[in-house]
Image (cartoon, rainbow, N blue to C red):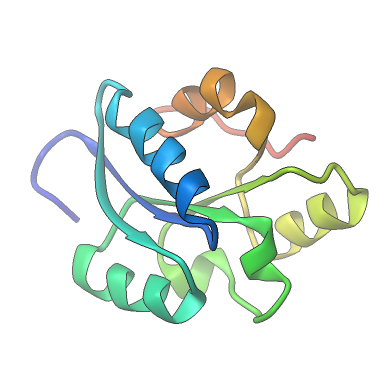
Length: 124
């Protein structure tokens, strides 16, 4: 964990343009520092080993291919996605995610769930 009072965040999304948009949003959020990005779960694990983030924002598509949990990642977990299928929300709950943020609402919702002191509940 970083010595600053900022909440540190790693983004994991297989789509470069989505990662870039989320990175811009995270970088503009007061009290939040982007410390890494990943396109795959293997990359994510490596970034987490180096950066020790407070929060991992992960695209739901990465959760389809490999089992990963908030406990394994050692960080608060926020899941993003474009599909509102209830099965994805259920999977997010099972792996210990604190929040589900639809990508079309990320600009409005993500800044509210990232800060350390943010009270977070998992809702669709």
